[in-house]
Image (tube, rainbow, N blue to C red; front, side, top):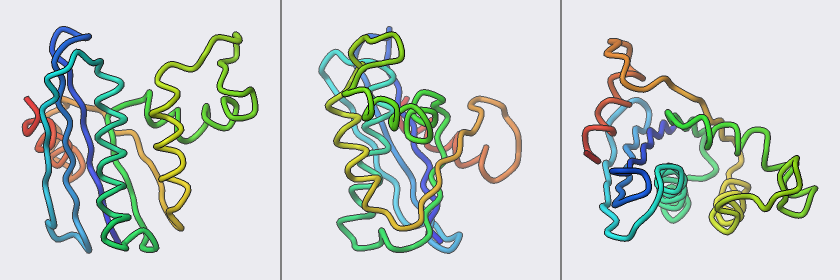
Length: 147
């Protein structure tokens, strides 16, 4: 089983951003990655880029047929991938109030990649809790990488 923890951040949203992810395979640490983005960006874009880059790494390494569980503290990303994206596609990339979907090109790329995974689940995890469960600890770790 592959567990992926992602996070994105942006100073003075919008502003300079960063994103990162950590990967565990069979509960063993496998990889951590982070990147700082000098362009003006938003927190939501960084959250999506973190997920995209983590999934791209998994896909490139031909691990996308394994059971994957992705953890993110972004409700935007979680709701987008689990619920909203199906309506956006059906409505030609318009929201329920007929406005263009923000970050549509990134969402399209992410969903195309996400769809290649055979068995993937995405879970929202509350950030900055100081809880001591394994998911909170790993979320805190990936958050600390991108600050």
